[in-house]
Image 1 (tube, rainbow, N blue to C red):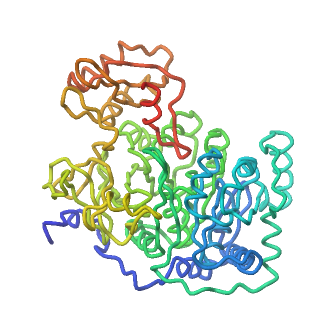
Image 2: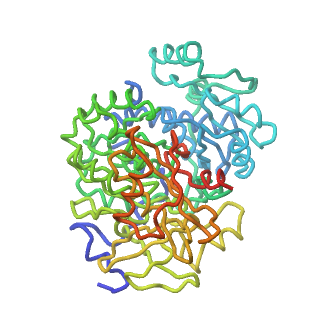
Image 3: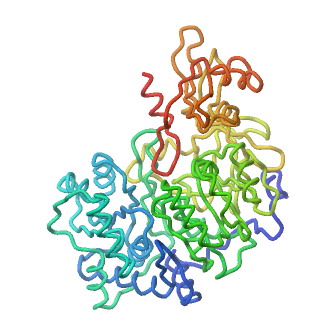
Length: 554
């Protein structure tokens, strides 16, 4: 074993060090193989309605046919998908990919300004959007290249029940603001039209583009990471090496994270489909009562989420009444999993919460904790198969184990670059090493740990202070629900630490927080300012956006 790959000695038994990309020529190969192998099994379920692998096959072909014959979209054209977790999403996603299109995943809660940026930047010429947000599209449509608009309603694929859902959503709950898109066609109509003509399968290779996956925008203007079929196929195979104990056609994965998010897209959307798993789609996980009601109906085996979702569920008394007897894997990603949350999760479910790590630019998985019981709390785990990860200094020099620096990586899942941004692409690579922008450290066994985001680092009197460390200490306090730490200007120390806290217990005081920090934080790391607030600003996948807190202080 090479000293440059210390993580190999920590790999679970049976995990291959390398993946074999020669088995597939595109994502489509993986999808079609699963559609045939598991055709009679349920693939996706949402609001009580499920679709089999065979039905997903037929419907996605119909959608691909419509895009080819009736819209005239060609291989390489960009199509935006803007909807929450619904049965329509995999049908539209797989259909677009089968037609050779490049999918532009778009957060349905984006403002018109954010939508306009993404659509103009990507050059999307078609969109499928859920009706609830069509009024926002109407405001900016003329400023984009979009010529084809397909609108879907929440209940469109739920059969008779769907008509009731659509009526309640529009007329009772008033969740669909009026919009005027006269050229738009309904999703169900597009499927019906597409069914009348045969789908022509284009030739797609690993080198062809599959996604423009826009970065979350939490650190500035969103950029489109160009992900090829090779990038995504590689990551599906890499994830597969980690899920060694899965039984094909027998798993049930809970998908509360939106499928437009890269973590859920690859792990829940593609990997689990390739394993013949049943995918329970949760449209609105923020409705915790209804979400837990759905969880009570099933015996889940796989659960993926971000820290805020794990924490939110754990703070619902009824969550403890969910059946965890079949749960095998709990995976956290998207943001740092806090130690107190991971510990509480294991106490309630009996299953460890294994943290993984990746970015939109890496399809996403770069590292993950082993799922065989050897996970290390507070660590982001080991580099996955065919992946090299190292720690570099500011000049791009590799650092030895135990030294702090920027986490850099290379592997077949790493993007070639950002869409039409050669300078930004150049800045994010040291040669062929992708720079994550995260500060981390590797131990002698090849486990990596994030110290913090580069841009979030606070410098107090010349000392580096990492918000994650402060947050870990404070969130462990029994009266704290959530916390975020930022740096604010200070006359004496250049920057000082300020924390924003959401109380779990209304009796919590500043004094209690300071006492808690005195125990575990050296003086310069302790918060100089404490503010109690009702909620922290978060992205729509639950990441706390420290940038907005900093902007509020300037």
